[in-house]
Length: 515
Image (cartoon, rainbow, N blue to C red; front, side, top):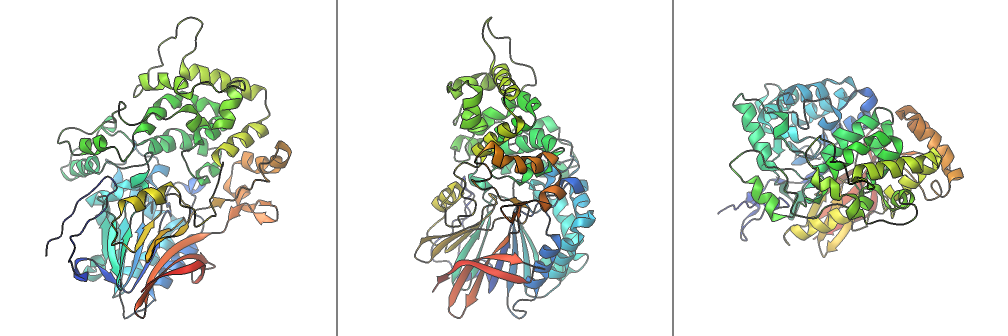
């Protein structure tokens, strides 16, 4: 029986027809969580429910003790982008960075619970790579984690599995085929060059250092490391808004207009689509580290980066061509040099946006500026609509073969439970970090937004955690998981809210059934 692995742009495994269930790991119950984001100094930590998470891990460990139970950590388990590292990826200091995260006392209960989990027979812990924890692909980091969780216990060590090559984690639960992947594979802001990641791992294994200039990060990493982390030092809540791409720059610039100088470096990268075959051909190069080809794909536009409300304001009510506004960005990509002086009487892209933005900010209150930017960020927000077929759903489901019964992603922080077709279902596990609850009423007018602005301007997480608007907490108490389990001859899949101390669960919607 032949197993054929073919990694596509969406990192999907294809198996020849006629294979038996023995070709994939087999479980009686599978629990999946993602986007935990353990990392960062205490003032940077966006994971709040650590005791609940530890309780949930211990609860899963007790289920069906005589049967096979797996816990899948489906990406962004740790968050190295929240750490101070030398460069965009922690290669030369990867082990030190992950060790530091595991030693934070705030997260100790979670690591202790995971250690207890793998010490039990019939348990399997699976760690899938995300875009905030790509260092988990390095063998030295994996050995560190295995040592922390299992020590010298060979049986416990054998119960830990890493899926870090971009192929996701395929398995079976009863008679159902399940595929888990983080979801950034179909996100042009946050894709991973797995071949370059393998080259970096080889550098570590062979005792050679990686020059930070050799690693070209994706646009999402640039946005976080170059811009968001700087703003986050004053406004800790900025990391809690999702998505971190569309119109994000508008909010960041309203909060800190000095970040305008970084627009030219972020803009051109967005045009790299993960579905572009040229990009994946470059990944297979045997030469140096692949650099983005800004001549392929599509260049993002200024209205995508800043949002229509902000763009309309800074363009004086008229919408100048956003392609014109970022034309200079393409020319000055990958250089720290300022753009060349424009002809007399004209303005460069960066200067044009700078002048218009700062001019607008001088003539509008800070409250109104932030309200308008947030309206762009949250336009058509469907955060709480679990059956909304968002872009991640569309891209992933289009890439998965018809034999998969349950597809499970994360990445967006937006939980989903969607029927694809008869006995074919899609889940997104949401997140365990804080989520801010904005409503149309909160953003309806400058006056309505003023109390929210005061909390946001304070910038600190304790103020965010304690805020109440419309008789509801500003921070949504929502921590999610997906469970796929056998029930007699059937297989049941459900999206679950984990509550309390991690041992109580609330099923969202109607469970999905195969068989």
